[in-house]
Every structure is written in structure tokens, then in C-alpha cells.
Length: 325
Ligand code: PBG
Image 1 (cartoon, helix red, strand yellow):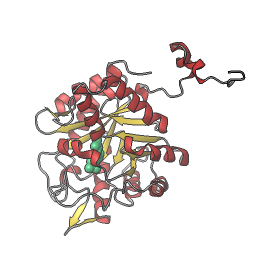
Image 2: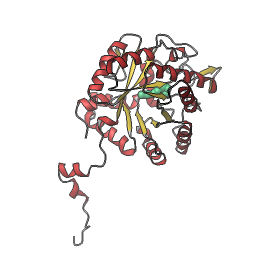
Image 3: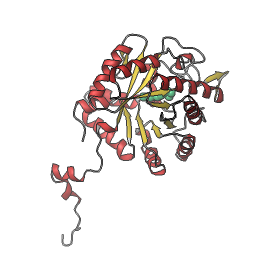
Image 4: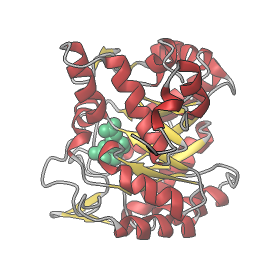
């Protein structure tokens, strides 16, 4: 074929060393945050998330030492309280499960690991919603005060970063002001800025027993159909003082991760959520896919889309099994 294209794409794919040279995206442990559950009860495995546990405080600490030892920069902690009530009071109780865990964790790992505190009411409310409920409505502004209290309690207990996941309007501004007034002007906020109402949170809700007891979360979480709305949500959080913008879930939202990382200069995080983990694990445990390759490809895709930080339940095994590349 005379004059066949001067460019042959396969030239640079010919050998491992050439492929290594031209590889555009690399996922390393530095990109990862490991989500963990801490419970007042005994340690138990989450049935829909094989390999992931609700840890009692003591077991959490030994696990955190391992995670720090692997060189993973941070964890995000979710508390599961002994009792739930309508006002989610366990969320902002200074003696509650998360403050207890934060204090113990700090003793165990010092400053070798970033301790990120998820701020939301749904794990702590009897009705399972992320805000105060009146009739069948989820009230916005009264919820802000409770979230702000929770944020300050966690900062006081030693949280390095505060991560509000509730999707009430104005929460970043309210939490920022509360933190500043309580002497935590230097504590960053990782905003769940763009959080869609997703089926992929199912296993998390089993883990935290936090499924809404009536209705669903569609009056506060975003409709998956909307793309431009993600820009508005992120812009609002930037204006209110967010330090890092998160998009959630990750795999169904690669386009959104891409948009947000181009439109804003703040670091962008993506949450590879519980349902994404469960699907991959289930297929891998059945021998239907190669689990290791699927994990590496998944995290690579999320980073390639534009995420600087990936919250993933795969973090530990990704590092342990040498999947960085
Ligand atoms: C709390 C919260 C949820 C997740 C993170 N924070 C559940 C929800 O919004 O229903 C989901 C994380 C996951 O699925 O891994 N609001």
C-alpha cells in the first residue's frame, strides 16, 4: 500500500517499555482515600461488600495502622451509633461514635494518616433522612445548624478534614462559618458538591442501616439526568468556601468528573461508591471477571476523567496487591 499513513499507532504499543513511556495516566496510592465504618457494636463484615467491615473502635485503630503503613494518605470515617432518633443527635454528640473513633485514631496513627469526617445525619436519624423531617418534608435550614454542630464536634475531636454529604443548600457556608468561629479556620472542607440520587449507594445503606424509612432522597440529591446543574452545585460550594469538590458516584458520572475538573481549579475528588464496589467484587468472586484488572481499569478511568483524589473501598487491596502503575 504505497503512501500508507506515516503514522502507525501500533509503533508505540510494541513493547512494555514503550507503552510505559507513553502512558498518560497513573494511579498511585497517593491518589486514594479509604472509606471506613466504625460501630459501637462488635466488628462485622458487611454482607454486600465482601472484605469491608464495620469496625469497633479498637479494631479500627489496628486497621488504621495498617492503612497508614501502606502509605495511603487518608481515610474517611462513617459512624454507626448505638441508637438513632428523629434529630440525629448521635451525629453531634461529643461522646458519640465518631468523636470517640477520631480521638482513638489520632492516638493510634498520629499524623501519618488524614482523618476525614463525613458529616451527615442519615446514619443517626430514625427516619434515615439526611435532615430534620416535618411531615413528609426534609427541612433545609434547621438542618444546617445541626450539621454545623457536628462539624465542630468532629474538628474538636481531631478530624483533619470535614466532608459534608447531606446535600442541603447552604451547608458549606454554614459549616465554614461555624468552623471559623470555633477556632478551626484551618480545617478544610471536602464538599460532596455534586451528589446524585443513585441506586449505587445501596450497600452503604445496608452497612450503616441508613435507608430512608419513607420516600427517597430525591428532594435533596441531584437527578442523574442533569449535567449543567452539576456546574451550579459546584459553583455554589466554591463560593461558600469549599476546598475540594467531590463528584459522586464515580463510574456513572465520568462525564461530570471531566466537566468539573475543567471548569474549576480546586482539587476534584470522586467517590467510587459502595454499589460500584459490590458489583465488581461479586463478579470477581464468581470468576466472571478478572478482579485485579477490573479494579485497576476502574480507578484509571476515574483518574483519566479528571479526578485528583479517589475515594474507594478498593484502596487497601490496590496497594497491597501491587496494582499501582
Ligand atoms: C451519607 C452518605 C452516603 C454515602 C456517603 N455518605 C449514603 C447516602 O447518601 O445515601 C454513600 C457512600 C457509598 O455508597 O459508598 N449521606
